[in-house]
Figure 1 (cartoon, helix red, strand yellow):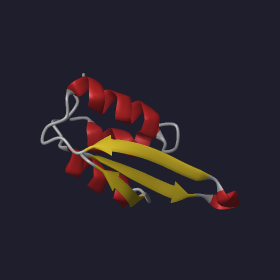
Figure 2 (cartoon, one colour; figure 1 turned 90 degrees about the vertical axis):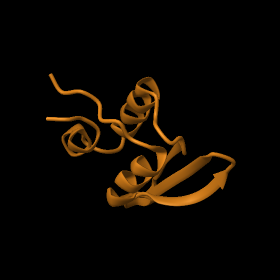
Figure 3 (cartoon, rainbow, N blue to C red; figure 1 turned 180 degrees about the vertical axis):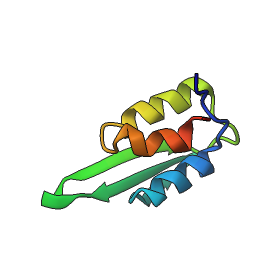
Length: 81
């Protein structure tokens, strides 16, 4: 059974940037990422910049991101094999 990787907020931002998101704002320890897809639809995610993400926070981010990105693309970045 795959396990969630231990990731920092910066790791998650880098993963999402690789999947087409860009940093558009930062307020305190949270970064807002956004991408625009065909038809002009904007997709946004907010990521806390913690040194090590709690597994429940990471799972929530994974779930939110999976609304926009197929899980087959996300899984390799968030879970061990």
